[in-house]
Image (cartoon, rainbow, N blue to C red; front, side, top):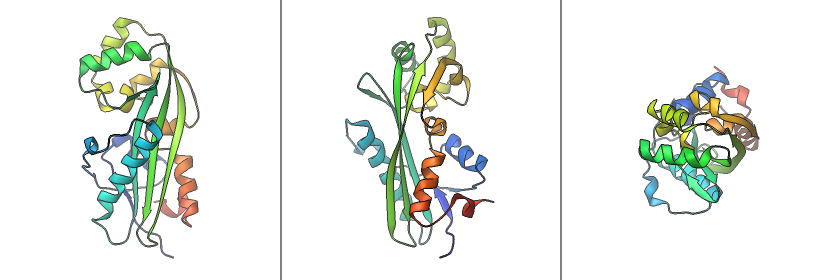
Length: 197
């Protein structure tokens, strides 16, 4: 069995960097999937469905490839949070997050077109947020960073200042669990090193 091209069905720079830092240079193909089509109120089912839909949309453009779709949301007090729509929403969200604990769900869908197989998994990580002041929240939102991230924070950038600890996979919080990806590749008969550049 040959090694197919790994296609990342996402325009997320963070996901691409995670793969690159792990030695994998993906072909990036944004899905442009309309997420409003999916109305699911359970976070795990939501991210798994969105990841699958994104991967499937991109898969239709290839004949032989390994398509990786991902989607992340943060759940706090039984409420699901994606990317904030605007600065006011991001500020309000951070008032809820500070001093609180959230659960970050990242759905992973891996479609192997050469074997006509698909695997869908979910990475789950607990995130403990610091008790930050109103001034810090406003300053953080003013950077624009929270508007680009599921949950309204980026662990690997400024947002890392406001996270006290995590329980689980740290790369999952950034948007793609590398250990989970390795497990999924293994299930399909590959190893991550097969894709090293």
